[in-house]
Image (cartoon, rainbow, N blue to C red):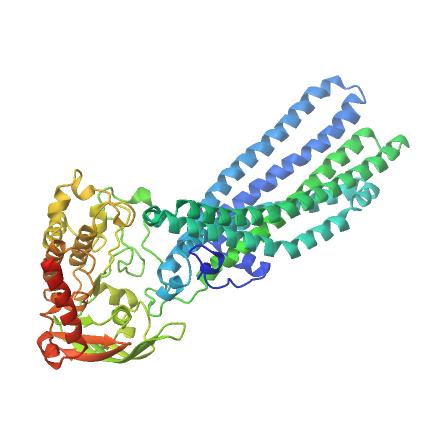
Length: 633
């Protein structure tokens, strides 16, 4: 098995895409900003036009002012040169400012679209990819794609216009020297073609190595306590060094070729300049052109080869962006979870509001909050009663392994259904099918008589609250984590939910109360405290259907009592699916389903199942004996 963060743990191979497809798809992000993009290019063109004045004025100074001794014209001409430089730099400064605004807007749009798509991808997609790899795509690869769009579009267009314009001036003024200047062009074109055809695989290897290193770094930061507990610091340092070395070698492979390609192309330009100086010098000595005309031609020649060099640099950027773009579009092209329904003509990824327009007292925006068609106004879904029906449901994971087979049961509103069985029996898989975290392969699942596939996915999940065995808290304050269940809840509702979940008391003892920061994944709280906060969060959501996944499995007996009290309050008037590790917690369940090997092998109440002396009875007796041994000890 590959270590987390290794190249093999990064998931499915990214599909190779031609450069033209990447450029075409990236170009669509300019559509919302046509005037800003046009203004950037216009400023670049004006700056280029102002640069054309310098060679012309240089020739005039040498031939007509200095050559003819016209002292009175020297000052005005120098002022004109300074004016040309001022216009060139002024337009360039404006171009930089506009380019920065356009750049950040486009980065925001791409990154927001990628993140929005991630929110709508099925759980199985994430099962096959490391978090560090996904983060690298959203942060680093998006930046590389954006550079192709902004810098590539502007620099490429201006470079082409500059090459065409300067070449026209060169042929108009000195056709013979212009032909000499083009002698290295086949060499430059051949080098560019070779680099284009060979660079992609090097850049792809570099991007994969970067993802692997970031994935390992994220895993180790999250598991730093386990690393210390097992004394694995030196070994993990070596593993990170191996990944960093792979990135180093990948980057050196890219730069090694660039260190040959770039100087070779620069030498080609220098060769052209040298040939022009040789041929032009002969023409000057033969009286066929003046020194000023030769200098003018050489200055223009520099303005020809400079954008040619920029195109070579742009070629490097294109190859890097192609490798990054493949990884970004791998996310954007992935199939979404079925069930995201269109509203108001199109579905917006999130209800984003610019930071400067948000009220300082507004409740935080919560991921998954139902939204209307414009993505900004909360949508009030019709509340279901909570009747649940599984009918002959089957499910298999992507590897073909059957997890559930012929699952059938029903729960009336307000009923408690307990799921018990050995590890791997399919309990968690069964409840994950209800909010459609995974899609069933056969059978039907209904809520209030309506197939769950007929619900909008947001609507369905708004009806379900989940308290898992390993509660997840975000790296923020306790208040923010509680309000995740209901961003618009009042202070009174917040406090009431915390009291009902038996967490208000320990929160109040903290120096900053509800504003206490919980740390990454709630590391500053105990397991029991995190569990009670997650229960309060579910209470605030106030959903009619509740899923409890072994919510008391990892706590001591005293804490279990507090959590059990909170859970009983949470389950009141709600249809509850309870995965039970400790069977003593589900004695009052309306129905107990015993699973083994993905099938329901027993069902009934606690007392009825004890009478038939089957699997449930054996599990109950084993736990009772274990509890008795603990009490005696």
